[in-house]
Image (cartoon, rainbow, N blue to C red; front, side, top):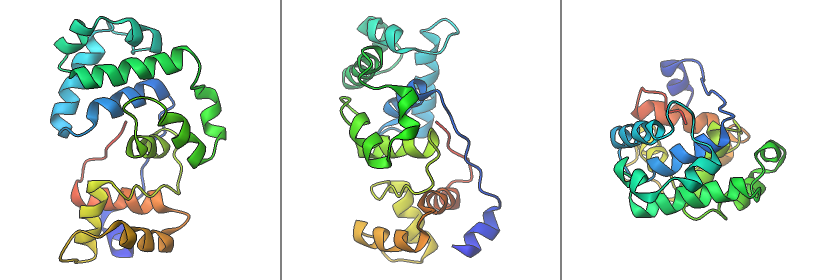
Length: 188
């Protein structure tokens, strides 16, 4: 890991406090390429006439408009449920920074379409928690395989074992791993 840090340079993780927008982008980005996600996200943002999407506007936006932006029916359902949770205040964004990682994950995964991976990305990119190890992240798995010269992708058990060595800076190690396989800095 020390070699990778020297090679890549300073750690750069920017906090994004626009929690609702971060979660919208995370939902849109699920299981599609970065290019496709960027394109769909741009079209999604255009639906709001130069304003950032907010919970009420997403919740109330007609499905055909969202389909026109390139969103699947499933992701539309996810975004609408997210909007509903924020609008009805079952998720209170101002409280999230004060909750433990487990409490944030528990709250966010109540939203249809947000699983542990999306909640972990939120912890990393919005709350800048330094102790998040997204063991199911394919990018992290590939990075560990590459950095440690493994024949096969590491198991979740192996990733957790390595993560113990990185504690309490699992996020930092993850970020460097991501940079090892892609020089572009991902942001939500």
